[in-house]
Every structure is written in structure tokens, then in C-alpha cells.
Length: 166
Ligand code: NI
Image 1: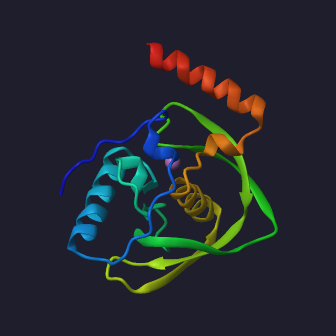
Image 2 (image 1 turned 120 degrees about the vertical axis):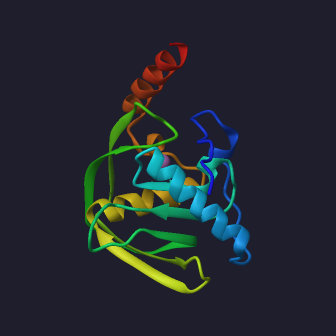
């Protein structure tokens, strides 16, 4: 296993649409292991492959809920989202030090392949729903900042620029 470098806001790869994975093989499983290790080291609850510079559709999630085992999803797709929404605080390992309140569907179901290539479905609300949507967004080049009001986004970007100068 290896720790991977986390790409930060401003990096091109975070803004690209990640490529569909053709097949689950040992190389992909190694990437998944490395992503888990990198996420745990950074104390995150989710990580998407573009955040480690790999433009492929893979995410890993561990919301530290005894009912939800840590999982990886390859080619994840949101197949259901509730009409009810919920607001919650989000941060991102690619934008350390910044957070904002994002409104999203409160409950989602996501389908994708597990690390053995089997189709699985993950569904839930709360942090799990938020995390799934945040990570799938990464695969489409979308950051939580994009889901804030223009004013709030501008404030956070200014804070980011100040942080970068230090
Ligand atoms: Ni993120």
C-alpha cells in the first residue's frame, strides 16, 4: 500500500470528468487500497480518484457507522434521490481549511461495482447520502464550492487565496 498525494483546489484533474472504468483488475484494487490508506491518513470520510490525480470513476467511503461497512464503488451512479433535501456542513480533502453548508437530496441510492466487480447498491440518508453525492460529484469535476451561493463561494475562495499566500 502507498499513500497518494492529494490534489488541491486549482489542480486541473479535479475539474475533469473522470473516465469510466472498463474492468476491475488487480491494478484497480491496488488503487482502491491506496485510496483507503490516503483517506484514513487524512482523516476523511470519502475520497474520489481524481483527488489523487487519477481521472477514473472510483470512490471510497467510510462514514464510521457500525451499520455501514467501508466500501469502494467503481463507476458509481446515483439511481434514486429523494425530493426532500437537507442542509449540512461539508469540507473536502482537496480544499483543506474550508467548509460550507450544502443543500442536497436527503436520501440517495447509488449503484456501482465493488472491488470484485460485482454490482452493488448503497443507499441511505444522513452523512452517507451527503458523502456519496459529494464523491460522485468529484467524478464529474464538481466541487462542493460549486453548490454554494455565489456570495458564499466568493468568500471561501478569498479565504483560500489568503491561506495559499501563507
Ligand atoms: Ni471532496
